[in-house]
Image 1 (cartoon, rainbow, N blue to C red):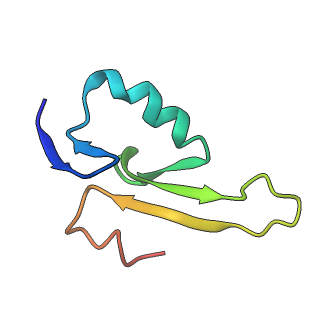
Image 2: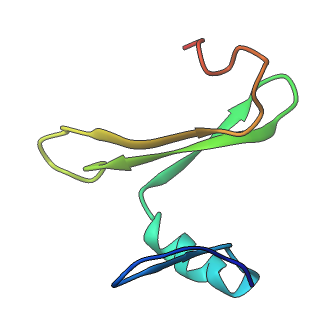
Image 3: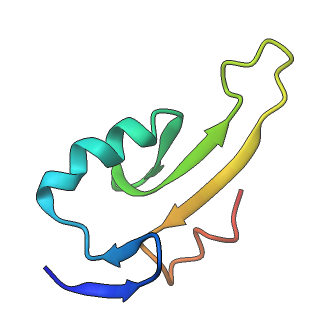
Length: 75
């Protein structure tokens, strides 16, 4: 396991397989971005307030891993 950076209170390190359950639990309000033609996941969006009755949502994080195909720009 490689430490990327160490600070007074935290250490940043590479993600390990045993971290995946923690990550999934932390990202419960996420949705998968799927490419239509290939039906393959190309990223995900983390949304805050998706269950909020006022229907005000905030895009917390947008991750597109399949770059260079214009997916970041189209909507």
